[in-house]
Length: 81
Image (cartoon, rainbow, N blue to C red; front, top):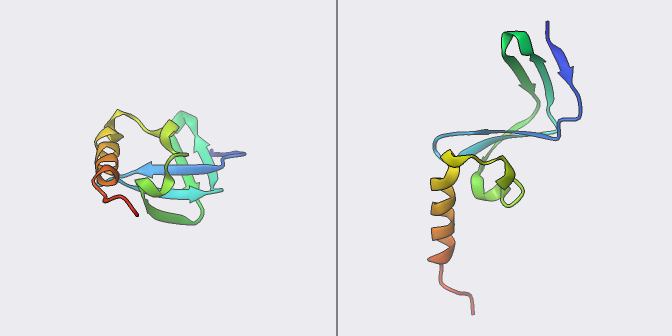
């Protein structure tokens, strides 16, 4: 007994390696009573930095280390002249 959840713009599944499974305009269905969700559509594997800054509001404390690594890589790059 699943129901469509309309107007979902994107779904992001965060992986332990710092990558994200990104669905743009997915079809989402749910059976709340069974705690089951179905996400279907075209999925892309992306690096976290590819989705910044728009994804920041979706990040939790477990993503803090990945953000620190991204920041460190930017701050260690030589300046363009």
